[in-house]
Image (cartoon, rainbow, N blue to C red; front, side, top):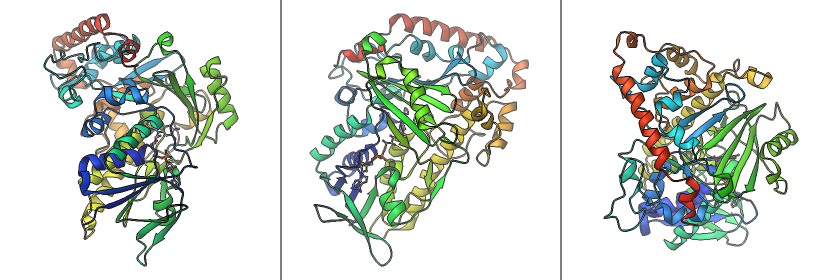
Length: 516
Ligand code: FAD
């Protein structure tokens, strides 16, 4: 039986893997996790993707179990500011796109233009976010579902019970370091052996397979399968096994970040339930609201901006609240390992690959990789079919997200300096130029987007094209011959739903303060 797993690294990737494996395999798997007491984990105040709910659900965790421990809040969208021009913003919400008579509502919007704001005309959530509201009422019920009186306790319903039916999915913001701590306890309680030590050497057999990792104080840790969660170092996968890393930097030049964790009175400030990405001279600044603080950082290209200038800009952006906060400068490795599973080693998290966090996909990559690994877990004969399937799935997700991120820069109207001018002339990933030509005559649909699963539905591409404003898009010609009464009713329904919700939903801060 192949069941001895050694995980090297105790950041988000290491602990998400350990806890998920325990939930999936229970005592039939033997897990050791070793993490350095000297090398820190990346933890900047993270925003996630709506699929993350399945992770917590799989572990059997309810929101009130883990969210307060991680200072977590809800995320309903990404808000893009100043990508078109100064003062402009739009939302890319998680809300499902409506369709009318076979056409996406955004297509109708291009024809009818009830107002200039596609995000407010087509999605209820844009106004809910502007008002700083929670997607749950104070009794725990969701927007479109009454609270189930029969549920054992408040918030007792699982996410999929709600989200399977809901028009309004959402994701979370949380402190990654606190989540790793929470999952440490979860995993150790279920039998994961936790070692704090430095791995100094990786032992290979004559075929180049890993037999063990050598530690300073705890000797050799041996196992069958080794998971490399050592972050950008890729200690096992890239260093010991020498798996090449494919850089995406030719198409995504942002390679650096400076981050601040700024304590804040969130009651006074209010919580806007979205991640904000504000365009800057050489990249963009993220703003992630948490209970008790805001996580913020400038993602930039070092070819265009020095670290000192980036830090200065970030501090000016945040204001006096950040005066005493130490900045964390991070060099980012953008791209992916050619294969994330090589021999008996699987890289998960930053060791596998990373793209700038513009659409909050880092933790989604981790969750997706773990699900794929459970699905394709090797048997004693190490049949290569499982490994190949896994590697295909992981590389498609990252390549697909890369293309989606490049689209943001290509589609942004902003061209006021060399950094932004270069976004219009730089090479794009294979296939994107052709797809862009199609989207100029008809909005993206499931047939014309990146063909493999990457977590992003066609409406997400529509939001980028309509929001960024740099590429002309047209309504489908057939709409000119189609009666628009049904679409008008849909727009009116959105206006009415928006009115109802903004009058009845509680402030996001008030919702979470019940728990703190
Ligand atoms: P790390 O956090 O780097 O952890 C590495 C671990 O390996 C540590 O525990 C370390 O101690 C251990 N280690 C290293 N060397 C050794 C050794 N020799 N021996 C033993 N242990 C060792 N993701 C999102 O989903 N949303 C976001 O908004 C987001 N924002 C981000 C912003 C920035 C600037 C960056 C860089 C990343 C962001 N991410 C985001 C990605 C997210 O932070 C990572 O995907 C996630 O934290 C996983 O990191 P990791 O566990 O792979 O690596």
